[in-house]
Amino acid sequence: MKSKENKDEYIVIIGCGRLGSHLARLLSKARKSVVVIDKDEHSFHRLTDEFSGFTIEADAIEIDTLLRAKIDRADVVVTTTNDDNTNIMIAQIAKTIYNVPKVIARLFEPSRQQVYEELDIQTLCPTILSAIALGDMIIGEEMGELK
Amino acid sequence: MKSKENKDEYIVIIGCGRLGSHLARLLSKARKSVVVIDKDEHSFHRLTDEFSGFTIEADAIEIDTLLRAKIDRADVVVTTTNDDNTNIMIAQIAKTIYNVPKVIARLFEPSRQQVYEELDIQTLCPTILSAIALGDMIIGEEMGELK
Image (tube, one colour):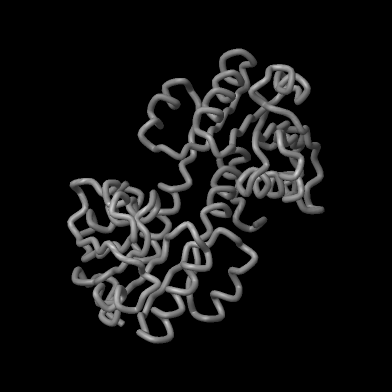
């Protein structure tokens, strides 16, 4: 695994919706090498001039697409589509076939979280994150321990 | 405005989707008084036994609904529906007509954030929050300053 500080860290983002495109922009600003995959070319309109990476218009469920994105050389793969099943399927391929060091899946249904973590796939659930953040804004305490 | 530590703080949540229901559960665990409004009775199935508040099945766009929820006595109103326009409309009513001390609107479209904040309505954008959290997970730095 490469160092955290390595500027050449290579990151593949699956899905260029609101979350994928915003993440791609943040990572570009942090001078990371980023490729974003989405099967809908219109989705790439969400990427602003700040995005300095590459885009691939194709279905990431297909191995050919992942190989075109050089998944075998990726340091990080993040799956951000709107479908939990798609996200976990691609995350599993990245982890078990291509041994990507860090794989993160967006997750809508929090009850599945443990299964993913047993596969060494990190998860991010925007609902839980947002509920905790709202809780903090409302009662000004650390809500994390209550989740 | 009541103290942060007041256990009798009264909170009205608009929308019982994933976010609204999860927040209602967190606030119940923190022993807050919570009322959740949603026009779809099925949405209340998301509330678990941990939820100790009340539910109102009605359209929160209607003033009558807000009065039934005793919005004029609320310390906090949070709008969590899936529609930005609905969220901001109810947030404005809560703030300008009923002088609710703290009003927070969920926001899908980040570009509108500044307008809301000029109205003294706090906003939470799950996309931005999640992108920053993913950025932190990936590069292990504080991404907030890059947003």
